[in-house]
Length: 82
Image 1 (spheres, rainbow, N blue to C red):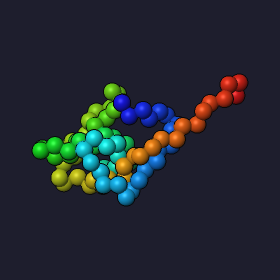
Image 2: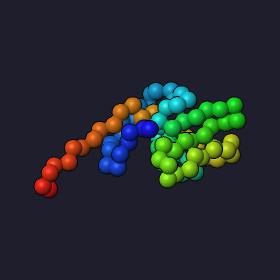
Image 3: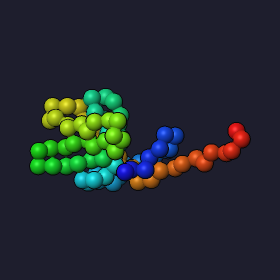
């Protein structure tokens, strides 16, 4: 599990070279997504950590760009009574 929750702020490093297994921010066909990067002999797969979403195999002809690698998460702590 990636450990990313709704409302979290992602720290994304654009200088880190993406590697298999990294959590990345990517643009696919003009839409941004956060997924785990899998690099296989058959190509690139954007793997969903959330079971409600499907993995996305990236076809060669698709407009695909890795924006950066997620290197951290900032989480705001809720306050009781607010």
